[in-house]
Image (tube, rainbow, N blue to C red; front, side, top):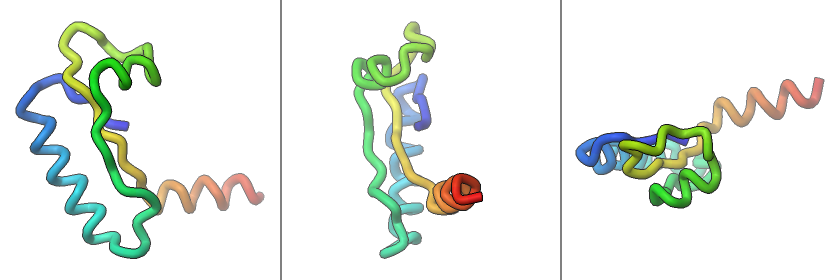
Length: 73
């Protein structure tokens, strides 16, 4: 989850993360999506509330694979 604190960052990061999804192709764990400020604070109440715009949720297959391998051992 990537918190976003400036309005211009939301479309900028969203585009980059969507390109990441596209490059991952069939290996994409789950498609990325945007969380509203309210939902981001509901899920992660420790975020700074003052300038929060929203958040982007994305899945990194390499991190997930490492976690699964670590849990297996």
